[in-house]
Image 1 (cartoon, helix red, strand yellow):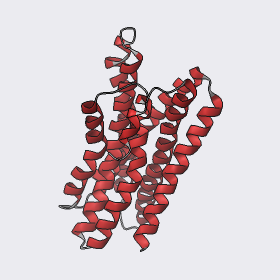
Image 2: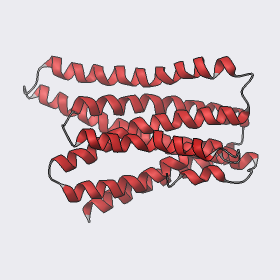
Image 3: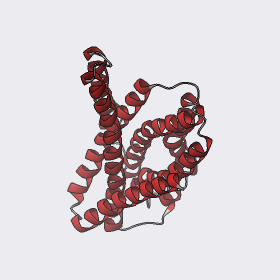
Image 4: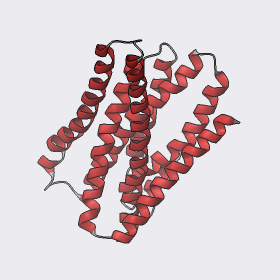
Length: 247
């Protein structure tokens, strides 16, 4: 929610709008990198266990297949959403409405990612690492503020309703709370891989849509500045989290 007030910026120009849209893409590209790194490390760990004879080929294969299927579902789910609810109404939809659809899809993708973060908080709690759990809460909170920027960037200058912005915050941030509850009761590598992979597929789709829009706008300097700003701001907030965990 800390990043959501960006949606209430006054009317912005074409270059500023382009900067903000690709800023959102930059944040999402970093999240995609972060998710893929974490999931592939999990699968690599299972492969190492298979090489050492600790698990069977079926166990390793099932986790790899789960990763592939979940990414496909995350990507395909938003393709279906756009085809059913956006493309069929494209001629009737105003620019503001299309921006709302895009913001909603970004919130869904980030929400899936944040469920995985919630699982990490819950696992720290169930293992008795209360200090680590609180550190993760603070760190993820700082990091997720940039995600709030990313969610509402397509809405800047369009005077969205406060209720809709609050709904976006609930969709994007609420799963962190739900994941914490689930993670505090039991550990599940399968559940973590499913939600992180779903998030990866969803984020990949949204990044492609944002870049497609900006290709038509052709404000390349603003787009480049936005992409780099979003990526490095998200990357910087991640390092703040890592440093806080060492304190």
